[in-house]
Image (tube, rainbow, N blue to C red):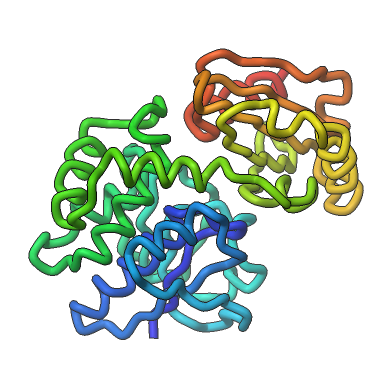
Length: 294
């Protein structure tokens, strides 16, 4: 069996694309099963409810000598601890290559589009896609591109959304509005839960860096817990030994982000606002790597 999954602390693309990838492999006669590597966020739950599908189960077993297919990541630190002991047979991703080493040549599709779901859509035959799975891919693309407004958005993403919304049979404006409402809903979540809601590990300029992104409709949503967020960041540095933890507070209404820092790599860095910054991979990571190299 091929075990299909996305990264730790999964976002909608990591979970939705894993499910449809597993179905795509099964249609080829290749036994596959989708998994998730963490708890679902409010947005991903909304997408599965809209699709009337049950989310995949949590992967809680070791992957030693098992065949695996990765979606939405190639950074080893973003996968389970036993990933290096597995046999990676395939990858579908839209991020930079992250130093992954495989036993044998895998099947690899990587393209600079706004979402892994867009790339998967281009690999599929439309007639093989159910309305439910079209909804999953549509939700993943809208999420990753922030309703096609992120600088990572390409013409391929626009074409995919147009086709998938028709196949899914949804009203795109209503679906998008409800998805973004779920994405930015942080009510009742602790500072620690918010920090770990969407956090990824990277090696930048030789440093172990953790970058969390919290997408909000207004930065005022976190005013009351900003001090708690800083405490949680400091605790993560102490617990993980990371050289840097960055929290990217992204206002999707104003198309801007405020950055918070913790850790010795940028010990003197003060919080800063960056107009126009929406994308972690295309905007923040190059910005951050440049500063760490200094």
